Image (cartoon, rainbow over all chains, first blue to last red):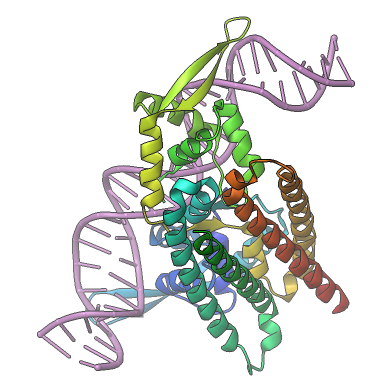
Length: 179
Length: 179
DNA sequence: ATAAGCATGTAATAAGTTACATGATTGT
DNA sequence: ACAATCATGTAACTTATTACATGCTTAT
């Protein structure tokens, strides 16, 4: 898959100016169930995008000789984002080691499968809770309409987490009662 | 994520001897919702694994000067696979361009979102059908028990596809009725 | 004071895709 | 005859992760 780092950045900056660190954080906290980016992708890309005129950087001088950059999207940046929105989507790339193990297991691996299922269940419950908190943070907001698209994705994320939790918890019971 | 190519291969070869081409095919048809591998990963890895004594190759001489290799797992290969089964799972890596667009959209992209949702719905319906066919191919088999683990994953895959289809179809209706 | 989190960046390494090259077999 | 699918492999390229380096700010 072609790298999409610049579109994620552009998409997030449409709403508010952000630093590279905040961008990374936002992706990790809110988008982790369908996307990830590392600092090694984000920081060089921010510089390249500024170079291409897609972003403006506001330099926040902190005390000492350290600098902090808060980026804003330019008109050209909005254009590039909207052009990408129009393009066809490439196929997903997914790699889940847990699913791989679940799929390839046989009876000789039952104990390992139960262990991985328990971990899987716990992680998905935690993620579910964090999505529900994020969802609640929207409740009561005036400009709910502006967040319609995020909310719809969040709804899907929550339903997916429910599915994963239910499935793994039933599966654990089945395997344990089989002995 | 560390590459897992050898474990996928090992896992598939535990059940039956396969060629590299068949391995790729199997991953594409049955495991695509949580895993993918390309020929550029599979063929070099098969040679490395043979070198490491994890596989034996049976050379199927075809007419002409072409050769075809059917691989079998060795005892050492089974050991390596079982050791991996015991290891903790790394975090998933997922990249879905469609989800990214759904999440980052706003009203100015509504038409694009509807288009991508329709494509998304269609692709997921097709995938659902192919999983249901694969599921049916197990029905009536004597050794159902041996496929318990695959069936459980298939069940999850089918439920996930249902969720994606239902969600996207509702979402399309919502967006269309909003005009 | 000190730990956790905020903040930016690069270089080395690893992983993964794609295009290319080749040719056999099977079904229509 | 022709197309689709079976079949193997490599080289060039792109993408992504990780470890390292540095130092500020905020809350306890």
